[in-house]
Image 1 (cartoon, rainbow, N blue to C red):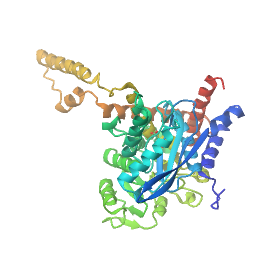
Image 2: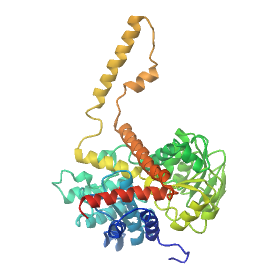
Image 3: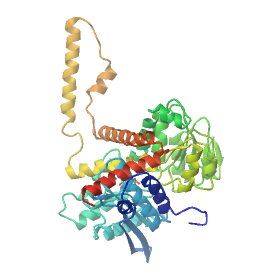
Image 4: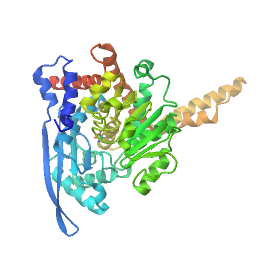
Length: 476
Ligand code: GLU
């Protein structure tokens, strides 16, 4: 327990696990085997920068290997620590199981504030960190496959892939050693937006079930819903953008490091994003109300709260004041175990992280498969699909003319129908399907058992059940 009376992040995840496991019928040995983190590797390495040697500390933790490779991002942040990477690795296990991505769970981190370094320095540091992990098979297409997380992105992933290629010159599957690469370096279209897109698909699926919407005390559709989002990084930005531009939701609050913007009429996400890129924060953005104590804005009135930044932001201090009836956890671990209990008792519906932000790893799975198959999705079928559709359109138009009925296919329909799906459309379709089925598997448990009163416990139960089944199949 820390001074705040909260357990650590890892203990918090374990408490959530225990709550779910206690409602299942697992032999205690197997329960323990699933819960514990298999291994955490700590590396300290020096890099010569600005005329001196600087020592960095990094971690790669493997929570489970019931499927290999183990999968999960690498985070760059000053306060990364072992407890945190182990908690995040555990979440990866449950996340992958829930969305049926055939991976174990892993996570890495480097203690660094990336904003303090130049691009070429970050490249040097990333290369060296990758080298340390690759030589121990902690990065490997068959064993452990990192991806972006907080503070990392396409650039770092491209460097990791390149470092792996230099050290494994004959590995034909080398590109699959890391996901989240830029499309021109073996990546897949739609990976950058994937986690935010997944949050959008998760909410769309939630709103397809009026019973679930009513459980949150809401009604209707996403159209007009008031949303507060914390963190306009990759995940928060894409989620807010898609929900406001495509689903008619209103972003009434944006919380950033230096404060929060609030506007009941809805904020222009793109404009706020540009302002942050220019000035480094949301302060001085013209128009909406600005409050310096941004975290306080989590307690503002809204329909949906999207914490998309750090872990532990909804905790024992503020949980009782949260007014949003629906929270969707775009970040990993934004609600502590203690806060979860308070919110559950209040009747707040929480769409949990292990489901809500699984869009990233889902599209990582597609990228990994693409790398191993060495061909872009849709390359073989696209034109064939188009020519078959053309056949139908020609035939319909001929029939219409021959019979004198005079039907006209609208140009918009023709254009949409005739176009074969490209990689981005296929990725989105695969992601949408994944988010729908994963939600359905959670809600089935939520609604079929009286003792399960929340989606998090239901999600954990589905995941733990699947991991347990895979261990059992191996005779454990
Ligand atoms: N870092 C992301 C997460 O927390 C993505 C992991 C991945 O794509 O492997 O889910």
